[in-house]
Length: 182
Image 1 (cartoon, rainbow, N blue to C red):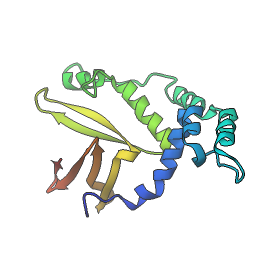
Image 2 (image 1 turned 120 degrees about the vertical axis):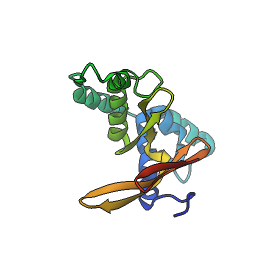
Image 3 (image 1 turned 120 degrees about the horizontal axis):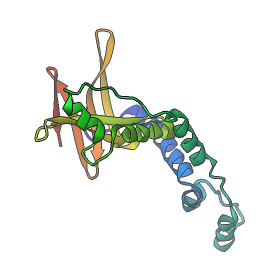
Image 4 (image 1 turned 135 degrees about the vertical axis):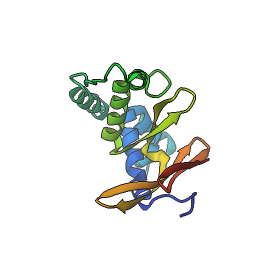
């Protein structure tokens, strides 16, 4: 597979993800998109369309509904039980992304992404200097391509291409070891 290409499902879902993000962002984002959501009438001049767009109102119920669902999912704080001897995991649950985010807040973030657009990515990496795992989240739009193979009874991710700003990160499993290319 070509590193610059995207998965077939990525292309099929990109417009849906963009629409969901705009609706969740609210009225300003919907109006900023202009004719994408507020089509111009055939006879409207630029000035008429501008006033039409300014008068339009958008009920931002989607973002409020998302927050209510998140509150329902996390109405009780998740419980983690770790033995006292597992200090590495205790450090991980207190700061799972090496930016100070505890694991419950991270989980809420990921669930929010899944409720928003239907998917999200989490990459678990190893911090050699700190000798502990850490996680990073990836929006659906930044998981460009992936390949899954059937291994016995399980489907296993063997390749993923992530957009990291201007760069691409490619992770491949080779002989049971994950290899990263940037």
